[in-house]
Length: 490
Image (cartoon, rainbow, N blue to C red; front, side, top):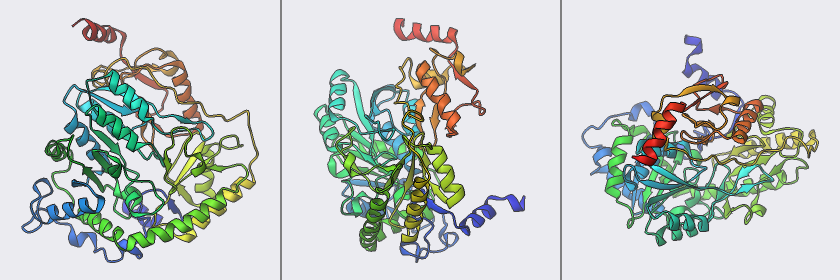
């Protein structure tokens, strides 16, 4: 066991030449910047002793720290999160929508949003992102769509959207906020990938500045903070901060890590000072790298010239999205080559793309390695226009609430036989963890074909109880009849 234990494997990996184009944003750069004077974690790992306050009843040092963080970001109230953005999303949902109520969410939300819908037995309406066909990825959201849905469903109590996406696509948050507020409904923004927006010229404007009422950010994703650290910001008016905080007491650990809280504070403090200069220097180097990647013949990168198409209102250039569409390779193949031949670990791969997550802690050498690797791979590719085309998103029909479908006993069934049946489980690719299908949704034939295609490509299809991916659990027919009767006649 000693040779196989996690700590030894982590130490071995940290000594290797594998370069991280993935989170966390500190990129293991201990010597430079924010980590330079951070103490040994064991030396500051304490509990709620006298003089160190309590995150669940902050009245002293933690309260002052969170008030200071709110002033840096321009929030009325900010909470430190040590259970990641997920606990912030769950708390925001619980604190704005009554149990059994209705929420409007973007269909490309993270699975934690669906967990919040399930836990609170909510009814969901969806706003669907547009599609970027030449990159095979979801685009932005329309403010008009939000306005129209709110007009049709007056019982919606909150709107929740994700911006930026995993690929760095930013929607018209200002317009969406205006639409929500016209209907007296708060806007929650999952800005997990946008904690760095406040610290760099040329980056998109944070949702907090554009009228959002609740904004959740993962400082560990794009800033130099430890994994699992995040922030929840509130603008007062349409939301009850005390109610959201009540849910934070439920979803946050009752033993919050002082190491993680110190990491959050140190990260924000450094970013508000030396980090701003570091961000400017990094963006200059990044722009040069993106310029060189723009010269590739076959592979394409998502760049600012796409703004205005497919609902893209703005673009976070720190996410380098490389499209393989129309080439002799797919996303999983490129991801595999970069890992095995160049020792570059990407953040994620999709059917026709890979995503390199960069941050201000990336080194110039690391970015040069990425440019060289992609340029070399590109030189060996050929165009293939008629094959390897990504299927556009398939939007499943909703039959039942997520909670009702999950409560039903699941009946295992082979994929080909499941056409027209209602799913009793999630199916998603991780990362990013966006459900292809959620419990209570109909397994349409084109949707099943898409999932089978993902499996063949070697993508990480997860959520299914059957880890072999041969079977899917559906709501049994007799249970379906009872649920339909209860839904429409009781």
